[in-house]
Length: 166
Image 1 (cartoon, rainbow, N blue to C red):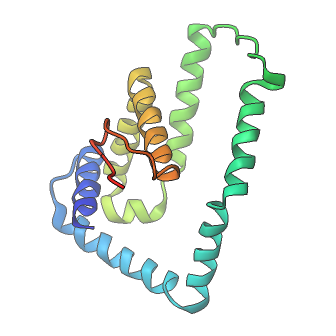
Image 2: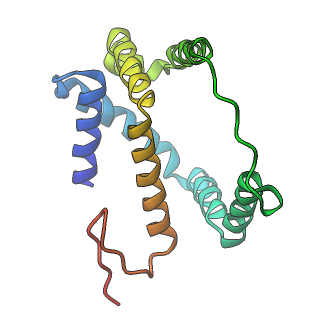
């Protein structure tokens, strides 16, 4: 848990360009305490646990993979390539996505970091998402982590330097 905490703080420090972790830690733990006190009590815990366990059922995962397969390869064939977008269309999409991200900043995040830092953080995330190499790397890392979680009985030596011994 401590390692996760350090990674979360490092990510927040990078995105929001803040070195004042005392405020961040105080606000983070106050918020976390509130969330945990609500979700870990009685019926709320049962509802959250049932929702997540329902999502991880094998038939549900199988149906999701079939839907994804049919979407990517309808009738077992590759779909037609989408025509290349013009530079103006790409600029319009970038501007539109930046605007939507700026409008979607949660109030709780603004209370923790300040509006200025949140705006800078959203800009940093938006810039990150414009780099194809970084987005592909993120996608493949998440896919790798998901497959390791789904098929935990497979021995893997690679990205995470894991080797499971049975």
